[in-house]
Length: 54
Image (cartoon, rainbow, N blue to C red):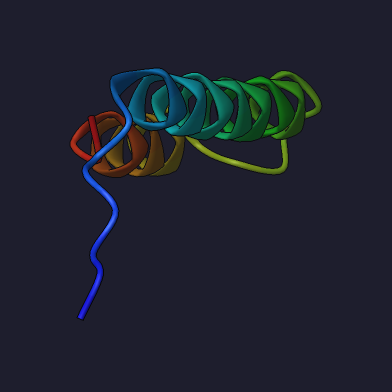
């Protein structure tokens, strides 16, 4: 079997993409919080959950 070695640049690109997705989700949560849809506690809990994915 011919396995390809891990490509560090591909790993980095994947991490950058994941980071962008998480930051975008936090921004959306922040907007919901600002609009009064999420409480402080809900916003902080969800943000903590998203940041733990790093």
